[in-house]
Structure formats: structure tokens, C-alpha cells
Image 1 (cartoon, rainbow, N blue to C red):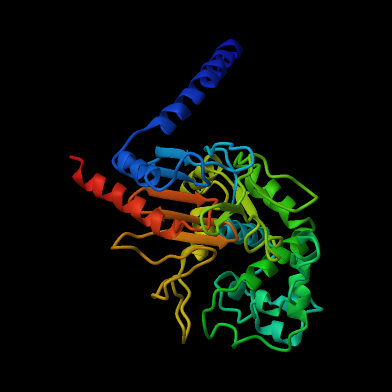
Image 2 (image 1 turned 180 degrees about the horizontal axis):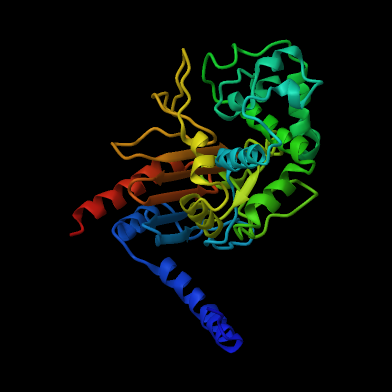
Length: 381
């Protein structure tokens, strides 16, 4: 049946008015755990010090979305849902999805080797596949161990290593640390190379690919893969460390300029959209996403959590459950920042903690917040 033009316009007008209301209702939802989680962070962070941003989503509704403390000490600007933090290794899930999009496009293959993509890479790269890079079984040496000592007299921007610099360091090596696929060892080097593989296969800069294929379609308008001198981070939080009593801004290091392993900045409001996209399979279908959620199995040295306990890992996500609750999760640590995301897939619960100070354990705090929410759900009739 054809809808009359006048009625169609009226319907569009009504939808334009009601859709923002629907989003407001979704974001305003209250649920078990909001007050205790708020109290947890309020008790840790004062109004005039670097702090954190915390997001709790339950069954599609925002239970808590709040900032604590300031984004930088120079201006005293308050942290809120739009404040962008350096995600550090939480970036890896975006890099993995970028690769998976190109696999769907037919421009990359999970079993394609490093030398297929980069013919100039040494012979030891012939046995390393995209899959090995994604699940940290490549055996590539850590580029931080290969870097020369930074000259303290030079500006930081001149001594920061970029992705191409990492590639050159790895290209000078004669072998990896172990045979690809035989062991698991967390590898920032591998994710730097994945970012470069995305560039090579797509024919465009990695940061641009992320923007055009992931961030823009999801309306993650504040999220950016930051490159000094090329783009800016809106509503930026600056990292801090505490040396003695006073705080000191500690926002960049010689390893802060790489992209594929940790260069994305994002906020609670944008990560809420990311969580929704994962839930609704907005970028990749359920079947296309499935390879990322299959734990890798190796003959020796299984994946481990930061404390050394046994874990599971897929593509850009840890996958081991917590106290019997299925989840996909990751954490990030870099100078001045600590981050964590926990997605309890069977419980409909997501917790994000972003900190711009090095003394908070974002991973432990995200699990404590999840515990409070899960306990609250059990107590609710």
C-alpha cells in the first residue's frame, strides 16, 4: 500500500520528535548497582584531582554514566561523558574489527602471511599469518625491547616511535621469539603490524580507515586515532601520575605515537554507541564476528590475565568468564591512563572504566562495579 505524501511527512516529523525522546529514556534508565557503583568512585576521587569516567549499561539501558575529577589540572575542566581518554590496548578491538571488515571485503585473509602483504619483510614473516597477529601467537618480539634509548634532550615528538618505525625494527630481526602458533604471548608489535596491514590493503591511512568505516557509521564523532600534528582530540583528558603528594601531568611517552596497538581516544558517550553496535551486529554480522570470539588454543603457554592466571583470547578480546559469567573484555595501560571494558554477554551488562591517572586499577574497579551490579540484579525481585 502506498502511503500518501502528507502522511509520510507527518510520520517522519513525529519520528524526528520521538526518536530523541526514546534515546533519552534509554539513557535515563536506572537499575540495581547505580548507587553503590557511584559511591565506589565518589569515595576514591576528589573533585579537584585527575579521575575517571564510568559507564554501566544493563539490558540496553544506561544505569550510570558519570565523570569523577578533572580532565586536566591546568584548566580544572570536569570529566563528563564526552571526555576523550587514551584507550591504550582497548584500541585493539577496533584494530581487529578493521581487519575483519577487510576480510569480508576480500582484501585480507586470516591465513594470509606477513610476506604476502609486505614482500620486503624477512623470511621469518612467511610463517606468520594475520590470524597469528590477531590472537597474539605470532612470536614477534616486543618493539619496546628493540627501541634505542630515547635522548632526554630531544623533544618527545622527535623520539616517539611510529608504526613505520616499529616495522623497520621488526624487519631488522632474523627470527621471532618462537614458532608462530606454538605459544601465546601478548604482542603490541603484532597489532602495530595489523594497523599497517589495514593501510596496505585498503589504500588509505589507518586512522582514516577507522574514521570512515567504524567511527563515522556509528556516529562516534569524538573518537579518533590520534596523530600528533595531523589531528586533534576533542574534549581531551590528559594523563597524570602522582610523585609524592603533588600530581604531575604524564600524558605521552616514546611509545605513545603508535596506532594499531593503542592509539585511539574515546569517551563514554561514544563507547556506549560501540557497545550497542556490538550488541546489534551493526558493522559485522553475527557469523562474521564469530572468529573474534573463538578462544585460541596453543600447545604451550596458554593466554594469561595481567596477574598471570589462565585466560582465553580471541581477536582483540579476552574471552574467559568471571565467577561463572560469560564475558568479552580488555584492559589498557599507558603512561597516565588506565582503561577497561567488561561485556557480560549473557547478563546484558557492560561496564567501562576510563582513568586519566596511573594510580587507579581500572581493571579491578570495572570488576568491582560489575560485581555490585550483578549482586543488585540477584537481589531485585
